[in-house]
Length: 165
Image (cartoon, rainbow, N blue to C red; front, side, top):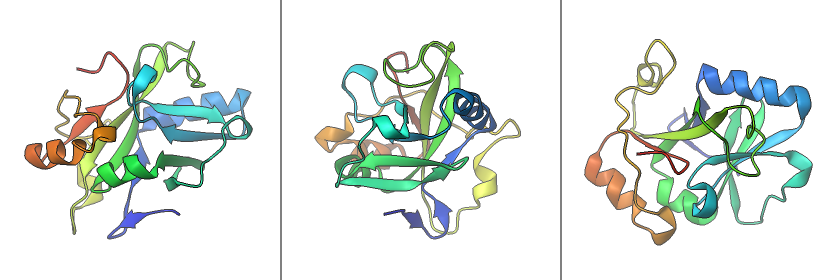
């Protein structure tokens, strides 16, 4: 199931992320993303060859970025359903099994509260980055507290990987 909120996509990507996706697709033409729920790779968006990852019955398709499907578990979706996920790239090592590993760049998920009537174009600066992102990691969504953290901050968040602040 692909989800939207008032015609606002649930998932988008920065130009840097799209460039890295295109680089990866040269080696692995058919890929997908799954938003990790934590554990070893933090809350990183994980990029896999499409035939190496089994999408579960309870996974939710958030949408596509650069023609690549993006999934999240139903429990994670429930915690993050009020947000738009923005896939970005930062320097560093990717998740152990994620295809960007070894390229000295890694995918990072930023999130933005979905708001009725919010102008999507106003959500990024000229570089394609989310405006006003806080360098803060939310409480573990699998414990059901992330929604409370997001509501209490009422602003942008980023999450992903162990070196996120």
